[in-house]
Length: 546
Image 1 (cartoon, rainbow, N blue to C red):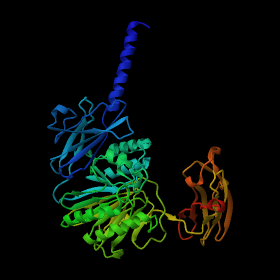
Image 2: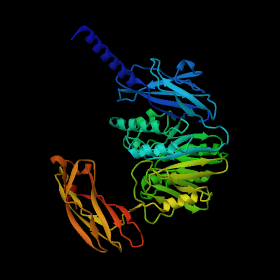
Image 3: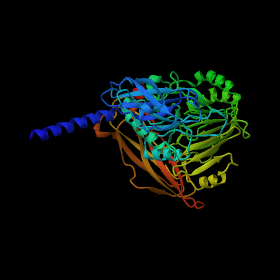
Image 4: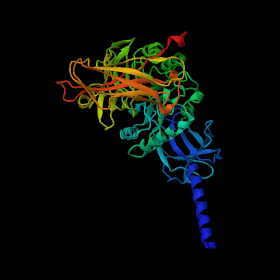
């Protein structure tokens, strides 16, 4: 190799290495939250990802006119903090608070560090401080599938001022090894949640069970990404923000790192302070009035016990609920009863902003006005006199509008009527025998499963397994869909065993069956779909229980 070629290769190698370091330490995942008044403050949050974590200063340059990223030309700048999450040595989080901003004003912003690594300029708008109309989008239970990206892109087309996210965001469960799920979600959000005129859409977030390692009754340390990636309240998982003169939004914690009862006194004080605000609202994860889960489920019951009375006392306008992976809108409810429109609180949700849908009851419970198995988000318009709610699906079609007299309500009802839903499987369709646990290492068991058509019309069904907690295989399932006439039944013996001949403890495993059923009813053009199935009961043997 001649000397000239050797110098060229060395130079190219150095450039590639230097470029890699600079790219890895360039600001990534820039999002805006609110740690103060949304009319006059913004908080910039971003990350530095790479092995070299020597940067210890964060800076934001900003102005009300664009300077195309030339930092020396911006009128203002401010510094903030750089910190790490314990156990993640390859990344730092930067957080800078911008204060004394002008309401309803577009700011051009560049974020970066003193070493010269800066992100591209972005544009973001503060909230109006007066009583002019406001629009935002809301929902929860997202994840990182491509459906999430599509729904975020759809949401941005409505030009919202901010997004209110009701928990279960990236589904990383507070686990450091799952930080990649947050990277993917933040990429989706930063790329798609930009309005047609180029404004990045700020957010505020409620905590959900999938933000926390252990889901419920845990500590902030077990929700490292929720508290680390997003500057909201420095001390608590619940807080309040007022948006202009017309809207108060409480962001609550439905039992994940703060108990329901611990927030009651604070909720009362905030609502009392804002009694003159035309519309008061709350967003949280677990619904008080669920559309998929059991009405008496513990954390829903705790919400009704501790929060509903204070909502009723101060006349909360609307509660944005999530967690159930369905669509729902309640009747107006007060004192645990349906009341006339405007005399109670409206509960809408139920958290399906990208997550797969779940079945609903064929006959809706007393408190629900409408529900469906539909991925969606909500567009909310608020002015001094009213609030309007629109549910939008993955095709960017509005399929529910309230009030019923609002523009587009008739067309939305027609769109909803054309949709098919998945209903909860009635009892008696599928049953199975139990597994006996003798307390020793489990090597396998046979389970008899019975399928019976309890309907008055023919059905087609498919049987699958539910497995959680360990690698388990099942042999003996029917490989094709089954057709059953009314009253007809079939039985199968399914052999369960640890996969790869491993030995496991039954107490660490949750097994069951899932049935997808289509009812062929002569009055309907398409089959009516049902889904559900039992968990297998694990019974201790007499010997092991002695």
